[in-house]
Length: 209
Ligand code: TYD
Image (cartoon, rainbow, N blue to C red):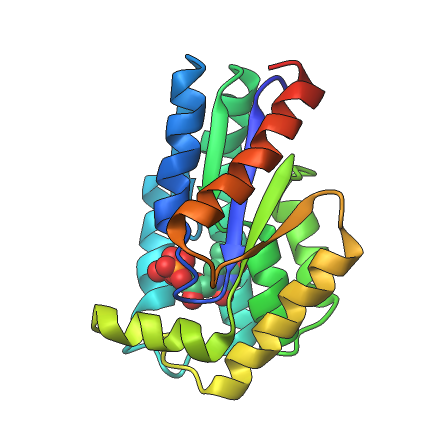
């Protein structure tokens, strides 16, 4: 793959959107094409699956169903959008990817290894070049989200679910220290941008960009 695949992760209210815009402008300045996308979603089919997943009316959804729909959305997204963009040499910046399924479905829902197995098909072997984990205490994240208005189906979960998700991200960041960069999301927006930029500069010099 010639491009770069960058993903952002974190609990609800971690402030990913602002940082995604900064990452985009970092690569824009280098004259590189940036494709901004998200999971669940990113293609017409995947966006339809997103609507099902986040619909706050779908409270009877079983954890296995949920995990499979996230994986289905990913399978389409990887093949229709992400891989073709990377093959063209573009920079793909994705709001959430596989680590979300590990944190939310494997740890949060307790589905364990089943999530890795299913997602090995969904991702088609694709791994991000770098992942920023926006580390925020779940309670603080929840307070930030509540100021924004309506909760989606996942945001409506109890705090113990969000702490399990947090434990999942922590475990992932310890398992993959080379790929997953922990970003202290309690810092100011400017400080966070600087931390991310430091990693991007290092990544670009490693990749000759
Ligand atoms: P979104 O509104 O994109 O959340 P945020 O703004 O916090 O990124 O909604 C995506 C929700 O789906 C979010 O709560 C995390 C969850 N999710 C999973 O549970 N598993 C997954 O594989 C992905 C990609 C997301």
